[in-house]
Length: 410
Ligand SMILES: Cc1ncc(COP(=O)(O)O)c(C=O)c1O
Image (tube, rainbow, N blue to C red; front, side, top):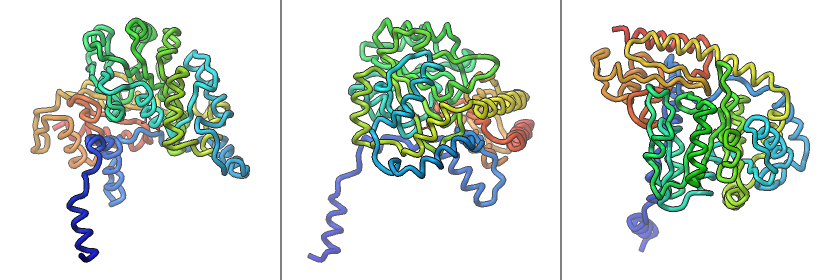
């Protein structure tokens, strides 16, 4: 038989790719952003509110720390999979400072961005068939990470009328004997909602009472406005620390999305199994990036504060302008850098000859008619919403909302 014939037969008989991975959707936010970038590259004047990343440069003192680390040959070697002690010490100090939790560095694993920490957190505590309560709207990665851990995401929806925050009553109504984990994110991506200390405590006490793990994603905890503080669920309910995994990272606070440094903090047994996973999956995070992250956490916080103030200014600007559009309901976000208008008031009406009935169709219409990229609510749960990131320059930000106002003024 010819080689060619044998090859052809092998292809026909080849087993399919993984069913589990085939069921995983591509990140919708990255997809919209990639489409916007490719249109921009083709010369189209697209304004993109799609990306969840600060438009600022990483602070120079952080870059300098990385440059210095490049001259030290020990950084060219493998280092402990759980992370460099210098960074884990910095994370322990930050966790105490911002989440009110005192932890030994043995309970910290440094990961390739908060995203790997999210993945590993679910892998560490979910068993096949476990139900994971997922307040919706949710960040697009959670349901996929839960499914990859053989868990079952159970959405608990909170709409604009309740400022996108779930209540204990809703969580209790969704709880079954299979419920083992709750995802708690404050400030939230995509809504920017921040739970009050009282709401956080009530949810924490409920989780404690029912022995439910909490995976709390605190990556936006330093980006809050109007004097609001996002109180960590382990600060609100200290006894919860033994059943909580905290996820965090430097990406959003320090304009370090590309450096890929995040971490997870948790009880010894969860950290042990997650650490074993990471030792096979990726080993240590790039040493240079870890040293830069340690500098960001330990150094002066003025640059981070300047970024926060710029986001706050843009937040007010975009909320004010979007609120002028009839049919948009725009709760004021108190954290992160997203605004999440409820757009059900414009669906089912005709705009430039088209009648969108879902936010997915609406986002397509907006991109095609006025070259503005927004992420539809379907990426985060139910239809009827749009997510706009205001982490872009003031001029582009204003031009984009002006185009939206014009489109919906007809
Ligand atoms: C809620 C939330 N958690 C985690 C991450 C992951 O961030 P990174 O992997 O860039 O550190 C993001 C990024 O968009 C996020 O929005």
